[in-house]
Length: 150
Image (cartoon, rainbow, N blue to C red; front, side, top):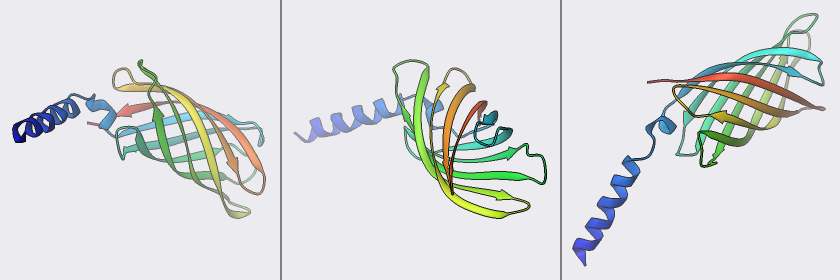
């Protein structure tokens, strides 16, 4: 009986080691998009830090192209990847979002997002929709690239 437990644990550890290592690596990337409520374009960057096999810490930064002053957004999100059985991954998540305007100070709210990302190779293109909820809500869409860090 003791030998069967050792075999079971050894098999389990071997299978865990056979999982795709790329899913366990950090990524860094950039994106461009459009906020439909502000009617403004945006550029940004993000980092993805694995917390588990399908969960990532997902901090990001957005710079909005406004007419006067500046508007930037900072998000601290958790991203959940939903396996699709192929090279692309659907994902959902949310977290805290801070908007800072040079003329009006900061406003803290929350965001929810969902998207589709390719997981082939070391460069991962993606498309993402995001709802920002502050004093009012806003919707934005972004496309970008994430790069695997070694």
